[in-house]
Length: 301
Ligand code: F6R
Image (cartoon, rainbow, N blue to C red; front, side, top):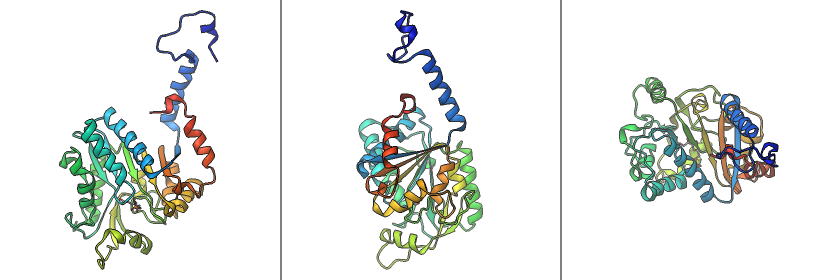
């Protein structure tokens, strides 16, 4: 609807859109401020494929890095972010996406694995992202799985996140049991970086990353759920039927330590990006699609 003022011939400010009144702009700005202060948003975005979901996540990260070249990124490992990392590498190579000033913190590492071990997350990150972009090696952080003093290492990890100014954007995958990071079911929702014992199910899920016959470690160092909740923005990626149940419990079930990803309902700005298969157990898919397709312009960034 056109504004009364415009239809009565009053001059319009040149930066107003054809359908915007000053009042609408004021309301949008106000909502923006209110959103930043107190809105707790879990946005569910369903994409036609894993590839499309990874591209969308990469665009969101690229937009942050372009806006804030010294962004602090929280990174995940596993099969889920592989397409995203490939796309970030492509954007660096072909579009000059610059990570020179970025800082990264990984969620977790296996206790007892040296950085050169092919199943270590140090190795994973080097092979799948770091060597393909221009992040400064001194700006990347992954918990030290060989530490002789794990509590001190965990405390120092938290301190370096704080010293970097906190994490701007955290990438997460989800375990088939609902874990985020390696916060297994029954983890405290206030937990900080610490040692955790993996469940048999997670060890079985991760066995394909290890050589045949090699034991998956029982212990990991992981950022806590409290640590993750302090990040400024979260992108939780979930792909495939195997994740459908955990995602439905996290998104539509009650918040519970038994589904650690459900704690993201307390995150100020969480986006859950799924492919169709991972969305099959959700009840409100039509609504999530409707909301995404009808986002107000000021929310699209
Ligand atoms: C990895 C991590 C884990 C994985 C999760 C899903 O750093 O923190 O939470 O994101 O186990 O693993 P994939 O992606 O292999 O299914």
